[in-house]
Amino acid sequence: MNAAVILAAEAEKPSPFLVLLEHLVPHQYGWAPEWHLGPLNMTITNAVVNIWLAAFAVIFIFWIAASKPKLVPTGMQNAIEVATDFVKDNIIYAVMSPKDGRAWFPFIGTIFFFVFFMNALGLIPYIGFTPTSNIWVTATLALAVWLLAVMLGMIKHGPFTFWRKTLIPEGIPGKNPIVKGLATLFFLIIETISQIARPFSLAVRLFANMLADHVILLIFVGFIFLVGGGTFAIAHIAVVPVAMLLEVIFTAFGLFVAFIQAVIFAFLSTIYINDALHPGH
Image (tube, rainbow, N blue to C red; front, side):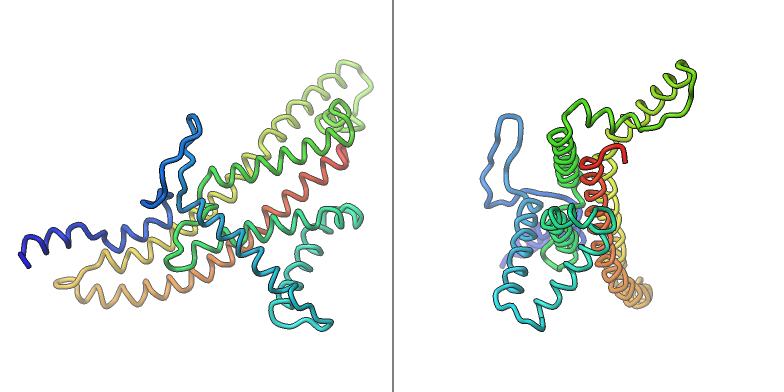
């Protein structure tokens, strides 16, 4: 084969470091046709595929755990029961009453496992992009939870009563009408800002933590490819083992971060729903 053809072929190959960048950058697949809905680009990306994978993983694992239930659980059934008991006791019942908790356990539990699997997918080699490191994914989840809570509160208590109890707390101090009016206005402004900030803080917290975790992992792997051979052979020998050790450590830490962020997202979702069920408490 002609040497020029070989060099051209080698030049077209993406470097391993650029391949690793797929863990941080959403991109379209070559096999996916362009699909636009008005101004929205609906083409399938790696984020969409991994969201589907996370949803499939949750359904599949629970199906396996429930397919042959045993009185004394073992294997997958035992693991799922431990996980669901953790969500029920440490997230839902820590915020809600037992009556409300039983009603909302399926929804909050689904949120927890779905977010956890999306968080953890990016740690699997060749799977690539973590959906929750995309602000649009986390913003959609956060906005959906917040809107659900708001609609729930307005349906249960009525729009006026719900917003009055939510934005103006009971028992505002002050006998002077002017002082009490100013205090009411102050709390109204503060609580309005708090309500608007809820979906933003919920989305940004999950997005920022997952993005930062994968940036750290990419940096340590990048050390391996940035240090070459030749005159840098000694540096290569010194850096690679350290980078690999740090990668293993931070991958384990990344799994812990994936779990903690799923807990926080589910916990805050439970708080928002409980506040809508019992505004002003």
